[in-house]
Length: 267
Image 1 (cartoon, one colour):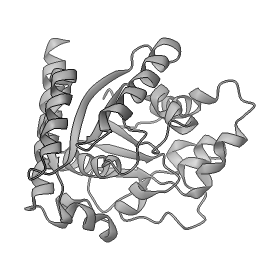
Image 2 (cartoon, rainbow, N blue to C red; image 1 turned 90 degrees about the vertical axis):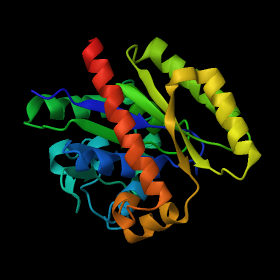
Image 3 (tube, rainbow, N blue to C red; image 1 turned 30 degrees about the vertical axis):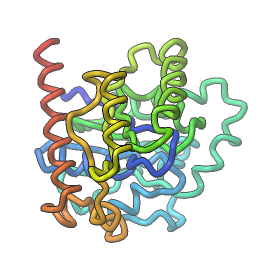
Image 4 (cartoon, rainbow, N blue to C red; image 1 turned 180 degrees about the vertical axis):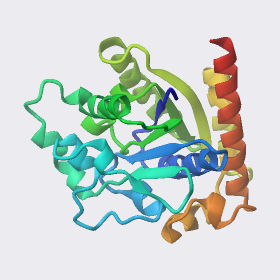
């Protein structure tokens, strides 16, 4: 039986390459014959549209329906146009969840409980479930942290990036101490790197000095094709596989999988 890894891609700052990382890591893993389920946990629904589905239809087959208890996970999984890659979509309905679950003492565990029920009761054969978190430290993000085995943190190589990361680390530590003791940080991915900009290399040096081997060797550059691809509803790996952004995400996928092999051989 496959042991499904649940990984959240998280940073409470917006515009750091979170959704781009989810979409392209998912596509890269799918191309390596790994079965991947992406859960769009952001009410903006950018992972949904970035993988070619709609975030505006009034469908009840979204992650919101799972979290409010009206649907099971198995009822809301959508196929994408990429083999081995499935998606649970999101839309703006999700933004009302925090108010609706205010009285639920186990609200932080809702996502975990639903995913575990699905994995335990179905013949699900996903190698990875990747969760795209909203750009805030809201209830949805807490749910994702509680449900996950590990985290990938995209970090834009810009001013104030590391200050924001300190706040995120405090939240992660709180979750580990109180709700999910086995949560680990898989790695930090440097994004939006501009080789012409001295600040980018300074932030990279600071991140590597502080977080050491937790920072992936791969660095994702600023790249026009990366920002164009979502409007076409495909990962950049398919939109333009020869562009610098694609090359970096192919490299990141390889590094991610090699990291998995090292962990497995150590176990």
